[in-house]
Length: 333
Image (cartoon, rainbow, N blue to C red; front, top):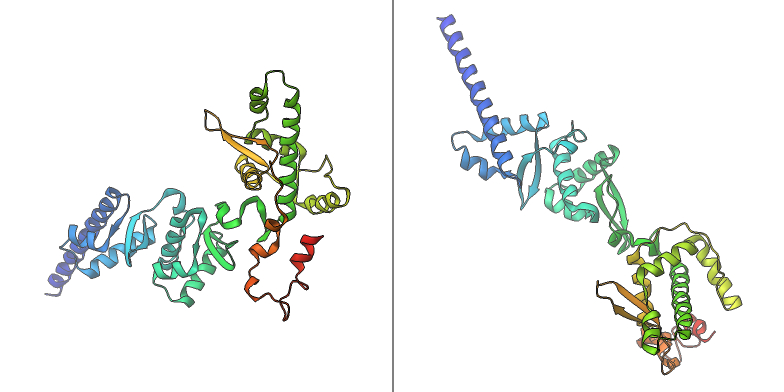
């Protein structure tokens, strides 16, 4: 009698094991068939004969084997086949780490704020902080400070280069705007365009030809700045020297890698100042040339009062007055 019961239990165990294997294969087939992944509802719809307990056992086994990945979407858990490149790095991670890693991976090089991670993962702050520290310790993710908010950090994958909207690009260093660096670039770009316009004055092709020859592309300006070699470290000293002698030194050292887009940003500021005219070539290339304003800009438009954030509080008495305004003193000097 006992032997019969034992044989029956062994047969039931073999049947359960066989059923579990079949379910695992079916779940993997579903995950491979959908690039965006599958949800619990998809599994329940395609495999209505399995119990919730069986589904939990199968999913946990696939996650532990590293062949399936889990992430949060729309407040529910989704599953997809593990990416071969990320599978090795997430080996041995628990479910919470995989969910948070997937959320951060989807954010790309723009990163994601911790509040958004908490909202998508449904983890409590204490548990989320523990997971983030564990992922940072494994060098899977990193925290990057955003220039848009001094106390705001965004998380992204460790091997990604942050987007310029996060770091501010070449114009920021440790969240500080490099005003002297931008000022030196502004003046050097304008000097290059002035020199090019001066050479074309001797053109024998007429005023229209001279005007067209005065144009320089943003790539030409970028090449000129690259050959000069302007660096953030020397920009401040150059700005001080320029104020004292009235002009900029010709040779400086290069340590910052600038792009053509960076040059177009600087050149656009000259356009807004009325010093440069912009045009577009047939191949959509941006062209710039130095111009002379027909009328000098009235001094009142340069007054700091036009952009002063406490203008409404300024008066003859009190803590905010024109006599004690540091911006007014700099403008008068």
